[in-house]
Amino acid sequence: MIPQLTKSADGPDGPDGPSGAAGPGQDDDGYTPSARRLARERHHRARTRRAAAVAALSTVVTLTVLGLLVVRSPGWPRTRETFFSAEYARQALPKVLDGLWLNLRLLLICGALALLLGLLLAVARTVRGPALFPLRALATAYVDFFRGLPLIICLLAVIFGVPALRLQGVPTDPVVLGGAALVLTYAAYLAEVFRAGIESVHPSQRAAARSLGLSSGQAMRYVVLPQAVRRVVPPLLNDLVSLQKDTGLVSIAGAVDAVYAAQILASKTFNYTPYVVAGLVFVALTVPMTRLTDRVTARMNRRQSQGGTV
Image 1 (cartoon, rainbow, N blue to C red):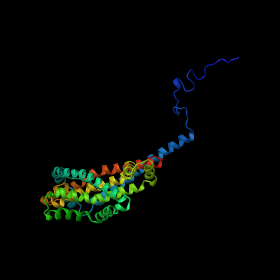
Image 2: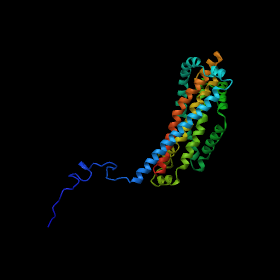
Image 3: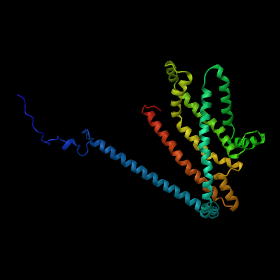
Image 4: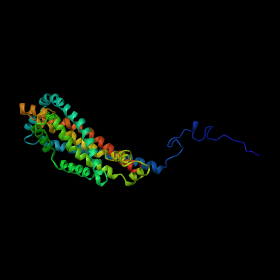
């Protein structure tokens, strides 16, 4: 005898109500968290709120103490007038922003060229074969020399030394020469970053590519370099942040960037507020790039810890 189907005492749509909707405290799949888990989550949220409150309070107290130490110092009135004058800041800001456009152009152009040259140097340092030893030696010598040479000396040598040669067709514009010095120096730093990424790729990747019929160049282009570049994105961004700040050094040749514009105003008024304005403008540009670097680094660390592709 076939038993008759009877309706559930909880209603026609099952124990969860109409259309199987989850009741309070339940997930969509019907799972009900235990009381211990709910208590643990409440405790975790309370600890997070308490930690945030303590951090905010300690930050306010620290800033207040530092502010009182500065404001109550004997020379604060004169310092405020010389470095933090609102009137001079309003006069300097438009000039500094006009000069900042040169810094941004140098960052974009020199950054792209330095990345390209650095990548070529890294590949040259990692090529194999005895016949390519001169190429490896030249790339190594270039990197060692420009990494050891202070940037300010490189700028002075290029900006003032190249025009002294009186070569035909060689530009004498201080902005172009200053940008060339920046590219020469930062390409050496970026080359080491790229080389570290290339050497971090396991040799089995190259061997697998060669076993599939790819040449050494194809294996480097299609297998090694894509993995290497992804792994070194955070240090590359850090070097670009440094390049953004060092573009202000081209002012030693008379190029009117944000720093030199501040220097001109300060020399006219004998007030150093324009320098503070220029510094704050650079900080405002650097902080977003730094936060982007931190975010990219954290994302790559999470992917690596989860077993994903770096």
